[in-house]
Length: 318
Image (cartoon, rainbow, N blue to C red; front, side):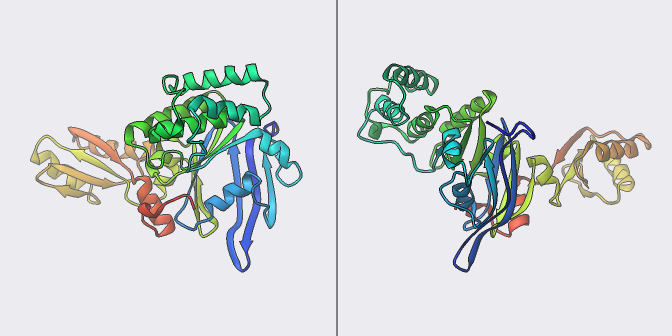
């Protein structure tokens, strides 16, 4: 069961893991709330996969405590494993079996009664739009179909928490968005998702909270909006109907940068409601009205680069 005291599905404190003299995970704390999507980002070698392996009981930490679904990761390993599902970046589908047979095999491994296993397989094939392909060997499936089948196999045991390691790697944009919708549906049903991804847009679109891991340490955590506000570059863009209004606004807002061709001003700001209201009040005091207003904030690529010093193209799940 999820820890009823604080609503945490996953909690880790002082987590540390080293290989000889190389520290891979260096004293991190995590608190993943039940029924949410938590994304862990980090460059190559940041320690993400090691962190996931510790949380899923595949590795024992050198120090620290892990509680998953209310169970101690060190002393209640079997209970933790019964509460979770893990879908890696490489599908665990058996290519020689059909889609239905893969699901039935998983049901057998979980010791489900035959009739119940068939009902569960049928529901999952329908849920993931795989009914027509159910009798075809998995080797004939597209990348998107294989990803859906792999996740469906994870769901046979109805896990409370699902660890998704790069669930959309290699998928085309349409298949990726289909997978996003499936993930959102799972969370709407009460499942907790722990996500690692190489796509910053994916974390931006899906995650309730995001943690950035670099060299084994958490360097930032928060919502996507909170992380973006930590990086300089937020500004308000004002466009005016004619040059005199632009000239007057530029005198009122000397901190702005003007573009005479576009009749716009770029005004530094944090993008918050309070600062936006103050900006408009400064213009109103001189009867200046902007034709258009838009707020621009850094994206997660900017955040990632600022926090880790690595370009986002280097992000992966290792």
